Image 1 (cartoon, rainbow, N blue to C red):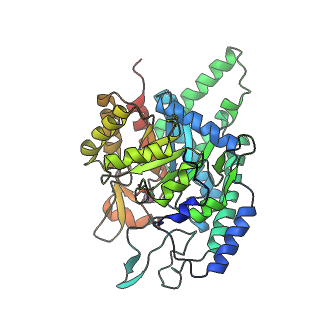
Image 2 (image 1 turned 30 degrees about the horizontal axis):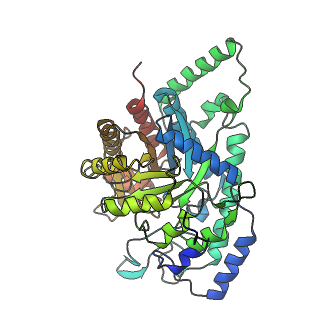
Image 3 (image 1 turned 90 degrees about the horizontal axis):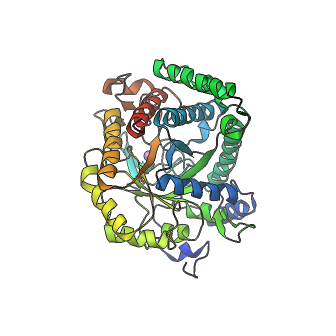
Length: 444
Ligand code: PEP
Ligand code: CO
């Protein structure tokens, strides 16, 4: 590792996608406060996620990374968080049981409050106003005043992340995620016979295990672990939460277990890369069709000079119609270099389009097709498809079309809530989990 790294060494470089905070003093005050507030996650937990992602890279576990495109302050609310966790747990149990693989669960949760934008401004009702950059920066309300970046929102974001994480821990460790509660994760909103049948099967398996006299009083049956992740975009925030772990003497960003570099900020010589290369968290790297292979190699070497498995997960997001063109050569080049990575498919971000009414949407079948292509390309290249990265919600929104509930383009207005990208609703998410289980299940 380059000796010159410090948690602020990124400040020497040009930083993309940062808000222009209007008041420097208020801003410094906020980051001072944040530097003294407690860590959100512990280094020991973060290290265990690196080990699990190493298993993903070896094909021994499946990565399910999922949650909101952009968390909203107004949705930092018990029932929303419960419903999102329920759908993640349902998907995980489907993939584990029907697909036969251990599932590593990572939420886009408890800190996914800042968004990169393609343009600094957007036009709403004929007026050009600054873009919404996530609730940690400005408000989504469509006025120029509401869009002025407000650094005090960062503190709000920290406290909401803490509250969310508290609920995640209580929900997953306090008995609710126990396998004998599996029926209660089922969301009321959809009639999913297939899921009910799966519950019966799992119940039978549990009864059988118990009848054999095996002790079921173990955490694997009674608890779940859901790790947190977000895009490491606001580097001042990430720096303020970066601390030395007293056990190892190494630096960890304690804002989340896993952090990722977005497709717009993953330049090998960029500030975001400079920051992330020095923290020991597991890192995601989003890769879209504009990648340059030499730059990606350089990036990998900077982030993972020791080639540690589990340190870097490549999250590809090409689109169902481009994946054939862009994924095979990427796999071949990484293989040739001997780089150890976990491969993850984000079938959301390359499949977004705006419909004639101006709503951003995605087609369920496009999402599924990218996932299928991802698995078959990895198989053909003799490499390992590790998991998926999804945007979804526990609610019955109408933001993506298709799926067996057959949401049509004209239905999108019925319950479209996202202020950013369109998410799968609970029913579409569970349907995708069954498809994933089919794709990965071992031939018996
Ligand atoms: C996202 O994950 O919400 C996102 C903006 O992704 P990408 O960087 O891949 O465009
Ligand atoms: Co998104």
